[in-house]
Length: 177
Image 1: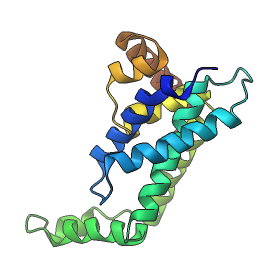
Image 2: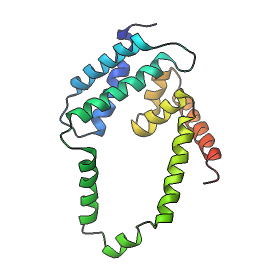
Image 3: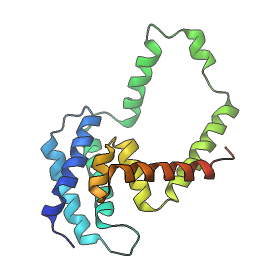
Image 4: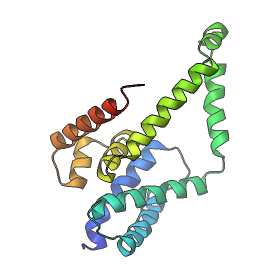
């Protein structure tokens, strides 16, 4: 297995992406430190069972550790964070009350949407870990194809092709919805 030094770029990429997505009172170096600890723990816990490469495994652990750190350092709860954008949306001058009322789902529509999201979640969790990680890096972490390719040792076009294959697989599994 490689040494920690070989995976420093991975930690830094994940930390930079995380900082770009949040407006938290946390320094990049703090996230990198948390990532380094997670990387070290990953090296001690990784078992090569053929399901995921070390980079895939470590990326997940690093990302999770950084999210945990952001949550610990955040003075607001998730509910308060959710309520804050909701208030901005409702109190906006360009939103008409009639439009707001018409956009509210009926209980049946709400249940249908919930079932779709639940099915999508199950389908994603059924994917191999590498494909789950590619989806996470692209859609959640908003990483560029080149960055994802660099982490996996493949080209941008190979990442794009992989995303298209994953999307086709998910669409086929969710056709009934």
